[in-house]
Image 1 (cartoon, helix red, strand yellow):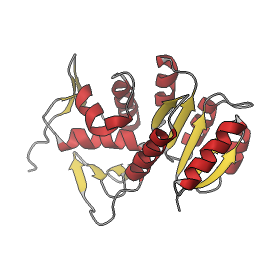
Image 2 (cartoon, helix red, strand yellow; image 1 turned 90 degrees about the horizontal axis):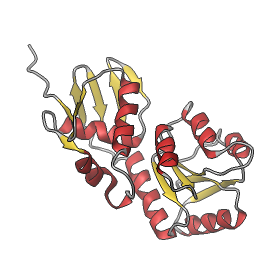
Image 3 (spheres, rainbow, N blue to C red; image 1 turned 120 degrees about the vertical axis):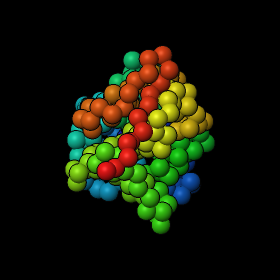
Image 4 (spheres, rainbow, N blue to C red; image 1 turned 60 degrees about the horizontal axis):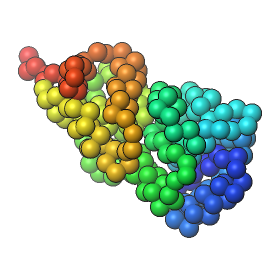
Length: 224
């Protein structure tokens, strides 16, 4: 059974989330503030539902601390619907973002989508190689000459799409339609934020910006 950490200080919402997710077949653990959430994080979780407005330590700080030690999927819950808050969450590498009030069935579908991405089907063992860089599509890991990178699922998927379409420009809309599907409600610039994070993590600038259009990775030349 997949286990979800619910971090929510509103006890009515916390109980509602817990009941709904348990009915959907998930195991749940709850925390009412950021300090309690971090104390519980030594346990193994498949996903974290993280409210932004928390007492003691807010959700952004909790997310930042979690990301220092784990790439566990994080979905941020917030009553703050402004673009600035969403971009801040994406800069902290959350995997998805949903504003209150939200539909429980939609939230459950988002959770299922994120968990599918974090648990790819076994047996494919497919890899993509590019200039010493290897993307393992089965384990969702990325390495360059043996060095592993801690990419979020969304970052991994954007890189995968660019590498699968070498030489082709992918527009922001291409990436949104392919990766976000029905999950996305917001600004196309979230793609730019993920690309910025990718470049920073990889330290290898092979992702080219095509101004006003989108992004591309040049085709790798023949090996000699």
